[in-house]
Length: 309
Ligand code: RRO
Image (cartoon, rainbow, N blue to C red):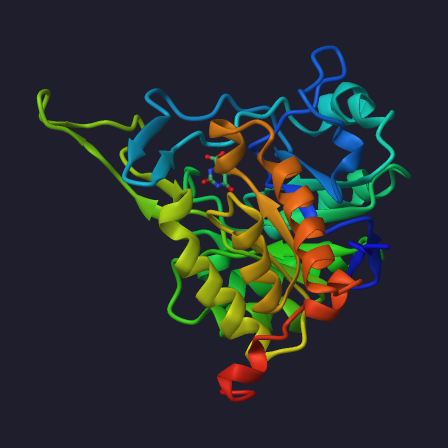
């Protein structure tokens, strides 16, 4: 019997595979071509306090093995989410994680307090790292602001809080420690990497916001190194995300210390990617005679010689 269960800071998941925020919209009126209840968790696109329309087009540009987005969190706002958006997930049997984005510590506290009260919400992912917002500085790039936002959210709920961090920092380990210090139960590593693209015929930058965030296979080794660094240096649970498109990719993150993984850009190319990853992980365990996936979490860390920081 293959056991794919895992847990993230005490929150049990049926398996380690979840969708990355903003890359998979669940709508029971137009269901996806797979059983959503097979996912370890569904992570909802970030919601903001006030409605906002997102960035002007173009919002997407392709690059080698990657996708650059500058979507800018189109959001109907907190009230709409609570009245209409959240209800779409009522039929789900798996875990539900709501991603939250704010512009100030007070906004994080306000949204988290309201969303966390809802019984169907199992955890909140605090998006501190969207590269496409109007604010000049994101919390994930400013230790003081990160600490304020994290502490403000922590003060209003006992539900699990996952801090999603940015790769665009000098030390991901230090930022993860700031998040843990101020109340994060887990860190989600990584958000997209700041990037851009130029239209060579128009001599213009392609994205309406000028720059965006790079995702997809191009960023996998970078994300993996950050998961590895944080897992080696600290005991905060890590959720790995960045370019995962196969079960082998997912397994690398798990061996590097991720308790669970998120799949984003791969779903755009292959809508069944998450199911293939799930099946592939189960097949690998069966083939290698390992019955429990959680036994594999972090097992490659020993080859790194233990703690380095
Ligand atoms: O909406 C976006 O532009 C966006 C978000 Br919230 C995020 O967290 N990461 C990203 O690459 N794009």
